[in-house]
Image (tube, rainbow, N blue to C red; front, side, top):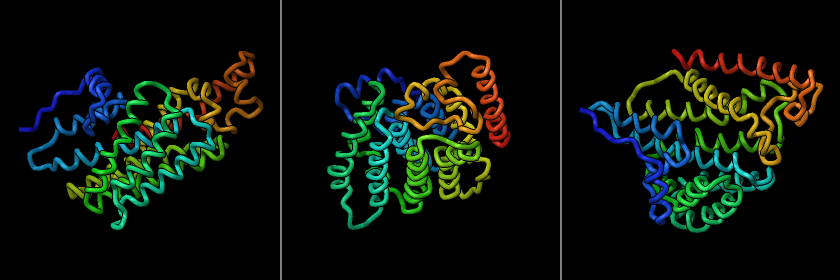
Length: 288
């Protein structure tokens, strides 16, 4: 008989946070994640009697750390400020496993200072709640307490790669080619697929297809990019320009969105015709 957990209600989670109560890691994972929070909960619904509950805790922790990184990247900090925040965050993850580093000092000093900067870029109330709750340090405390193989999987195999990859493209400010778009999707989401598979490998002794896991992550990321083209354009002073330059050659990024000339309409169609097949390519392994 599997454990039964009701899906969490976002309204109740937000009310708890507004009372200045500390959210559980499961609750934190549902503050911003409309898709992954409930899906992670399904891991508990579907867990067999011989499957480790620790897997559930590891996946939630991975999601919460990755969500914090995503919130920084999506936020309204200038790109130079984001690079500085990512540099500081990378140092935190590099130090999380050092025996001579006191995790409470790390949270009280490094994380607290960083959270103040991240809060300046919050886009909405829910993001502010997430950042504030992450700043309480429980996600990092939990990560610090995991066994070394899981700690390295989350911090090294995934989060630091995400930070480094995002930093490269934030520094550039734009993507030149479809190849760049593919590489970006790997750093941001393919790394999560790698980490999820590695957790299963460690905990359940089962080796899944890593290429398929990367494709699933990249597919979800590229779908989000396609869905959010207009939002990203509105925040172009703060975000990477995700439409590669090679697919809108002959027209500026601004005119691509703001003009309704025949040329602009034609190139908008070309953008979709160039990127949708990449999403389809990623989806095929995901559907297997």
